[in-house]
Image (cartoon, rainbow, N blue to C red; front, side, top):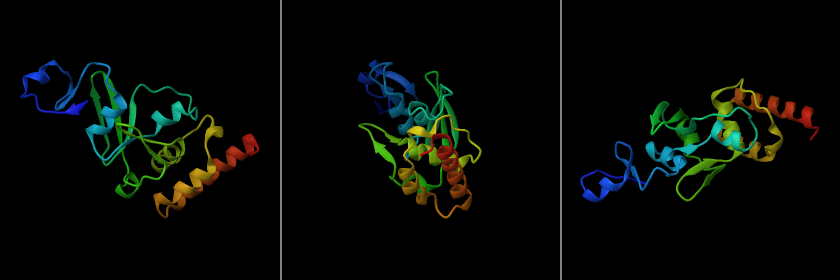
Length: 163
């Protein structure tokens, strides 16, 4: 997948996703595409936590951490870009670089959600590594509210699972 102008006749055989974006066929990697629309960006939030079993609600849209908030629909897929402060967005702690895109660890996605929404409900925090969470937490700056919410979630986790 790449970003090209359709001036070359060879590009006419490619699958058009969005203005300036083409793929070999309809079977392109939607996570890769999502992180190419706006850069820097990475897959995070519910897209990561559903796969990790932390939240049970299934979402059809792909959630992306970015420098701006925006909702796009491309090729019948909804992409939700959520704005994070630049210093958080560009910090690589808790971000895994796949072959063609970046994705948050469950711990980083957990913190990203709490950064934007203090009252979020998590179904199952047992797969989270709390040591990693507390290691990543400082990138969100001196944020007393955030620390308080993380500590409250940790307390809930300990009461529920006795760990």
